[in-house]
Length: 62
Image 1: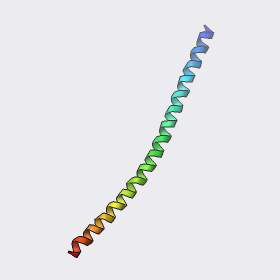
Image 2 (image 1 turned 90 degrees about the vertical axis):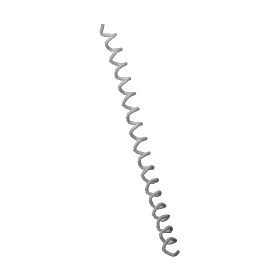
Image 3 (image 1 turned 135 degrees about the vertical axis):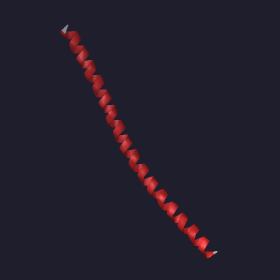
Image 4 (image 1 turned 90 degrees about the horizontal axis):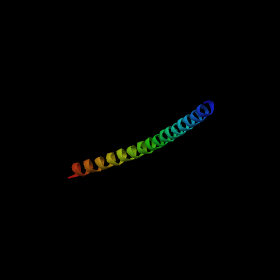
């Protein structure tokens, strides 16, 4: 019985380790993606602001 229990414990520990590693990888990828998305959103906001200012200048100059 102890051999079977040892095998089951090893299998469960291996599964838990794999799950933990996958969770860690997912968290790191999400963090990196969020940072990149934030930079893209800031750049988009800056472009929108410039576009708005040019449109207002054109509107006032007419």
